[in-house]
Length: 57
Image (cartoon, rainbow, N blue to C red; front, side, top):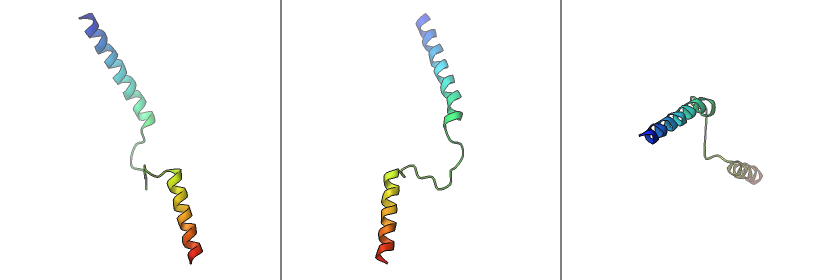
């Protein structure tokens, strides 16, 4: 019985910590042109492609 109360107390503390940290770390609202898959490597490939297109013209 005592262990069950302790577990509920720990779960409540964890939930409160998550709820407190969330607003500070999760972006709010839509971000214009957000692409989560866009990495530095993808950007370099796009830059190389654009350069090759210009050179081909």
